[in-house]
Image (cartoon, rainbow, N blue to C red; front, side, top):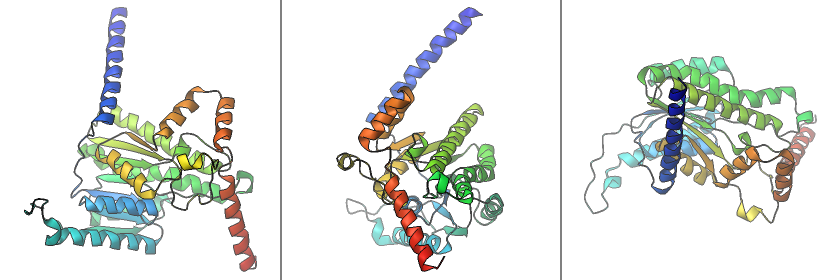
Length: 341
């Protein structure tokens, strides 16, 4: 009995080493991207900047798009951009080969569907998911992208805004996954993407509700990944996206130390989505951008808390959100003054 455990232990060690070697090779040799043509891709928060960029990238790869957002106008704007991409792809002038020949392009019918959904309300998620199944079909790729931030210090933040942050950034992932995962398990096919944040790996001051919601989303994603592995459904893939600060305006005013900022500027949304798409299409389990985020997360795991505080203070990351919070507070006060509140 003891001999069996010893043998199994060494087998596990070999498997771990092999996994490390294979992961290293993927850094050196770029894996081939899978095709998503004709597959149904649902994106939450599709009216926002990242959601819109994801939609355009999947449209260029001829996926059928299902766009969810609480804002009908911005969602329809995204849909029109997607339709324009479809029209360009359907134009024979765009099908010329690089050597002057004509490529064989599969027949493609432009398909994009928009739904007004509040992902923070599970009834809205479940009822709209049923409409999607009836009108479009089963979802192959679920991109949980919707997110909000309250922009208040915890003691100044109304309870309802804290609850809203938690519900949209974390709880909504449960509702959307419960709506679409059963069919994925039945078919042993699908891909679930969690767009989280580096603030779900390590935190900073002033955005407790946001950090908690993203920590929760990452915990949900990791636990679900283990559950799918345990069920031996190898046809279902999971990708966790953890970017550093993205220049979408969501955290406008956030600043780290000015001497460090040129080396660690906010990410361009296009770069963030491009890196995320590469990870999704190569079935990469996790993507952090930029790569230094991996190192910061590792250091946070092994260093004492006081050492982390020293590092944060050196980088100016300990109070990096304070200018953002001050701007939000000033904007709110100005709006209140204008409205006579």
